[in-house]
Image (tube, rainbow, N blue to C red; front, side, top):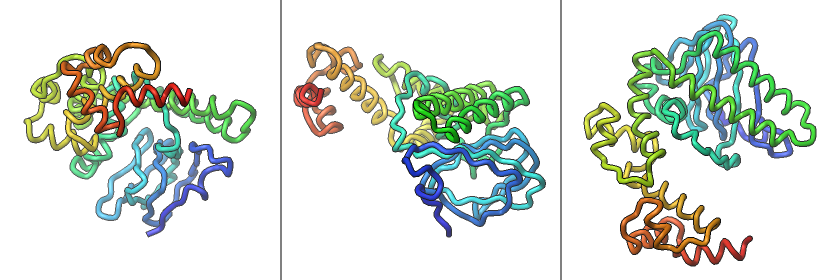
Length: 289
């Protein structure tokens, strides 16, 4: 199986975003990537093939392909695709409140994970006006990447985030029954990410997901790579690390502010996650500054 390498698809300057247009898209052969991509179908029709399954594509379909997922396109009839390639690890983006959008989790985490189980029926299907907005943003991104004038990295990154935000909002407005089922899980994930400093009970998340306990735990771990409790602790530790870097608050005060009710437990979890104590982290951050 062919593996598409970063050095063959991204500019030599190393900037981790690229745009590839396929008009028409022809069969490429089953392949994987070292990068991820957002696929926007702008015209025609065809089959999206993964090696084991195949699903129909039509204008307005939008989906995300992770690097390790094999795929190809067959039986194409004037199929037009725009692919936004990105190296997630290299971007190191601060997401701000993007994780508060259930559509973000559904589009980027849940739908790819549940694609086979849902037979691709929970993919994002944008309206004509939503597609027009996406195409306009992609054209702006493509223009910045082609011209590469001073400041292009900043503007291209900002435009990429606009595209991600726009498509996440589109998913959140979907009327597709299969997509709505994923949004139920995404609502629980978004609630966790928006309220992690508050007391959170697992049963509350399960109720938001409208799933059984077993199904929710399995779906959450499959999408996020860890249990809800582990994700909650990580969110709190990340926020605590930010406060240690940017404020003079005491360790105990920070522990309570981010949601822990025991400063000793907080310190143990911080060391487990960051490989140093909160005080050591603050000292190291001060020296680095």
